[in-house]
Length: 90
Image 1: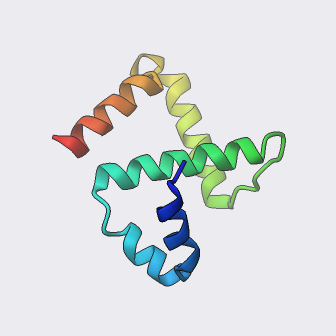
Image 2: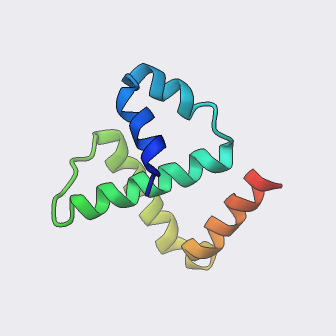
Image 3: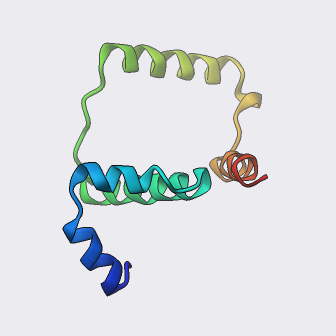
């Protein structure tokens, strides 16, 4: 949870200035923020469906086919996340 000083500054920022400040964060910090934002969106939207574009549907179908054909290539999210974090912090 942001501290009061940060929250006060945040309320005075425009979307444009907030974007500029966020882009100053390190890659690791931005990835962490994206993860937190995504989790909050998922929590707020539980039970709602998000429409997929035709391209997204095609990509999802391709990935499912690939997984069905080669299940040994699958990796748990914890392993993938750890590898991604290592890349950004290494």
